Length: 244
Image 1 (cartoon, one colour):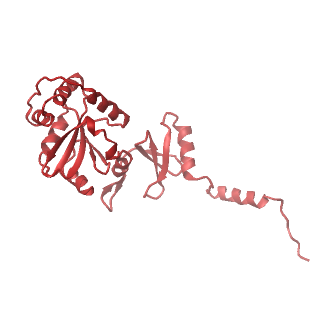
Image 2 (image 1 turned 90 degrees about the vertical axis):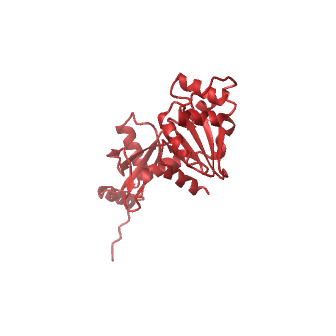
């Protein structure tokens, strides 16, 4: 008569788990392993918001402070800070990811605290946060003058010092805000002294701090995409076409 072996409940489950662990397998999701490992080894690392797979096999994205991106292996043994490039598609995956994370719905922008410049039909639209003493902003404005059929909402964002607030106030209180701004930014014509309620400027600074607008110029397209810096004109055209 054949002899049958009857195991105690759970015995085979335990043996199977042990075998899997010995083979280097684990039932713990790598995202959880990464969180635990990095928290233990790098206690000064900001709290991890999200861990997710990337298109690269074995590489995971670690997101902290809402929009800061790191990369690591599935065990959390190495941490990489840098940009991930898709060489086949010739795209910067890190840049695209950060743009998505920092996007802001256009309708959430406080347009009442901006002034508007319209060129041509004004059919296309964008919003820009600019400090009047920002050299990059001045260069950017000279490029933007080449755009046609666009509505530009300008948010004065005086964050570079006291004189930035003075110039912003004089521009905001000018009879023709757009002209005073353009004259200063593209021709260095100092805006004449003027006075009015400048609460909008203070609200702009508060809004920018809340939404991590840390430099100027910062541009928002109609689809909410954010682009930081004085990017080339073709990048602006690309963003405008994407929202048509």
